[in-house]
Length: 196
Image (cartoon, rainbow, N blue to C red; front, side, top):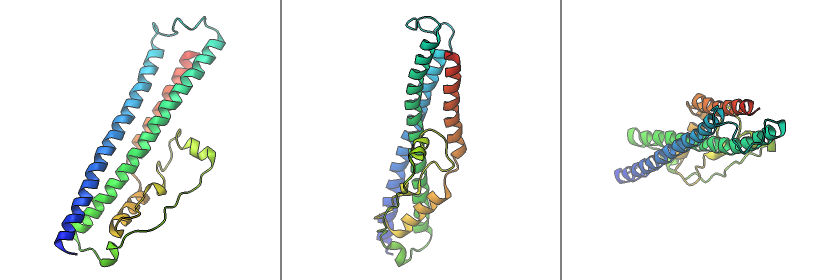
């Protein structure tokens, strides 16, 4: 490969890495914002002088039940938002890792001609059951992202192979994401206990 081609491709990869880092950081900010909203609702309900609000009449089971249903709906929307942002953040980090490995490959070793061919494969989208698709947005999973998130069609093979290896390997941040998702569920449980 010519030096000019190497410069062009390394610039392309570096720009992709930079844009993915910005995207990754944005997703992390959005996760934190969603969690802060959950903590704010939780703290408000846990405070003695704020809960129960004046618009809830009496201390009967019907008002507690309707309040818990309303809170659960709000919590579920926020929780699904947090998990969705976490999944997008993980996908971005896996792409960053793949592009970074491809950049190292192009700079520090020679690229074979067959590695420059364009990946024209077909994306594999796996069909999952309705329960799996719903639980995917609520419960922490061993693998937060799916193989078909790694869309590498149209990229040179040396880049697409590194991205796919990155997706196969996974991320090291799984424990952090699980703790955040489980904390969100614990907040919901403690809030429901407080409402009753």
